[in-house]
Length: 193
Image (cartoon, rainbow, N blue to C red; front, side, top):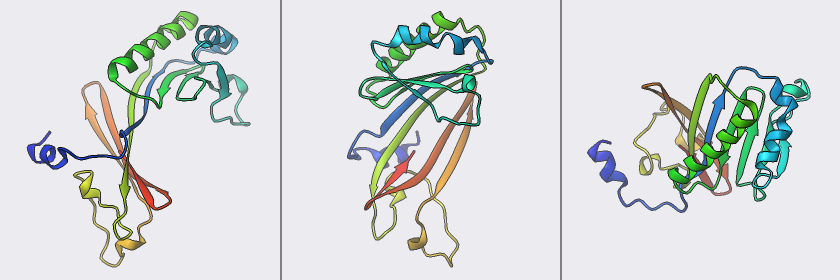
């Protein structure tokens, strides 16, 4: 991190922890046998994730390709089980060590049920939200990120109701994608990083 950037944010107080959701996901070649044996995975996780729901139900898709969500009782965690996808999602992130321990346990259970031997993609996402107070109907982005953009002169900043920008950085063996955007909520705007 650049020295100027580090000192700019040192001691910054946020109203809540910025990590609101953390996701570990694997994608693998289509394995239709998973649909017939989803009950085996449910048996392995029903003590911690007893609630089952369809993920984004689509009446135009064949039921076999629909993913299932297995939720914890308070819905702070869910596991997604599908014929080409597995994911562990938590909205109660505390530490990386705890998160890694949990996703390792659930991936092991999933693999014991379905014996996945080939992986197409691994995804690991931290989703942060920082609540920003508007100042004269503007979002003070410079208080939160070292990033900016300039509107054309004939568009006043007060017309801006929201925006979204995606930055993708290539890394060794993958990429890091940052989405900076807004979401209106009463008199607060959510800045998602």
